[in-house]
Length: 551
Image (tube, rainbow, N blue to C red; front, side):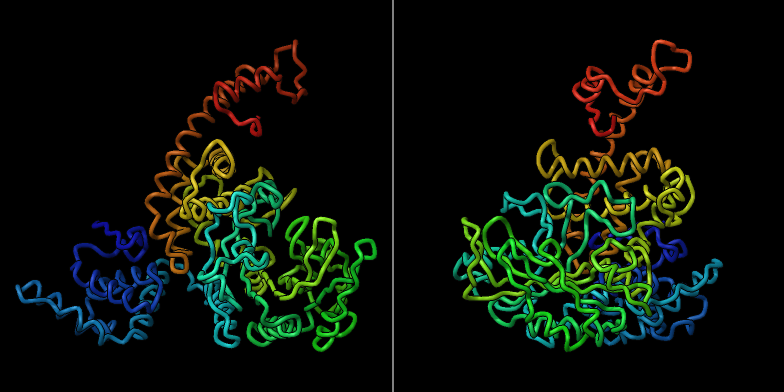
């Protein structure tokens, strides 16, 4: 089979590709470049479409796809008979809607022929949920799309990783935006920020895989007002987007507001409460303390009350007592922060001359809600990663089990590896590298955790983890082109790290079994003892490079 990789979108493993051999590359190349140039659809889908075009051309019945018949059959015949091929400009006359329809029909036919049931089309796929959020604020309320900052803030030594959407806007909040820069004139913004929470104050690493909602990498969709509108508009926009645009059932929504804190000298945010009472009954507008509903950038600096929107997955009940109670069926989906104070070094609060709005909504969590999934890991964006992992693992498919039901930690490993594949791919695309210090060491730990889970629990062969990178790129590359641009480099780094760790892991486990774990016949040791002697732990770490957290 001829393997082609255009713009790092390689679909030679695609089921359609298996049916296509020795067909004119001219057709494949020209159509794909036309589609990409016109920005009609994502790069990965354009590659698939081009393969579909080649398949259609090979069909014994040109009438199978009349859209392609004239242009492609003619182009092929011309090339075979030494006549000049159809010029690229001719491709512009092809109806794109017809191409998409034909591609879908071909893809469905290939799956049905293989005995697979046609996939049910999601009303709210991840890409649509993200684009709807951005379009709402851009088109209806004149917000400027301000691209996500890198997940690795190389110019901000105070942060290991970008862990919130507001990180890149700190100069505005602090009144230090450099003049003659985009930040200096920004009044309203919207984006979807790449976030990593692993290390530092916000560290979800050890929880990832054990439940349905923790991630080290996630997208935070956010909207901002810098001295423009304030609480009234922010609450109105949130309500309209959730209930009228996304169509979320109003009876499942609860809102919280800051109920005040006498010890801190803070009064209740009755202004936000009154705005919410325009949309929700009093029993679903709840006062909460500073822990949940007062936001501070740090010990000093801009701060203010916040208002959270919670969703009850079950519905038709009073779930007010479950709000902010860590109940998996009553979840926070959106946080609206009203930055109206500045705290000085004495701890005193003073009103800011310009008041700001900073909102954040986790994309994965919203997807689980709109796609009617109880787990973030069941949404569409994770499924390609799981399917690839299942082909590499030797323990059976992912089943979504948790806790005691997940015997052997198989599904825990699936979730952890899928999450870590996303984290490493995005972080390396943004310029980070695994290292022995700082954020580099955190990334190395994440990669090693994924490798260990994959090899020891999923029984995957060494080198499996780097094979997940192209799947992540295909899933997110249309919105984050830096993934596509850096795919080869990401794969190379992950492969080298994985090989080095696999060799070290093998040496360390052998030493551990030979020198530390007593045999059943060794009466000089207590076989129930789980403490590793300090000198042996140090040898594992210092000589063999075996991380202490793995002993």
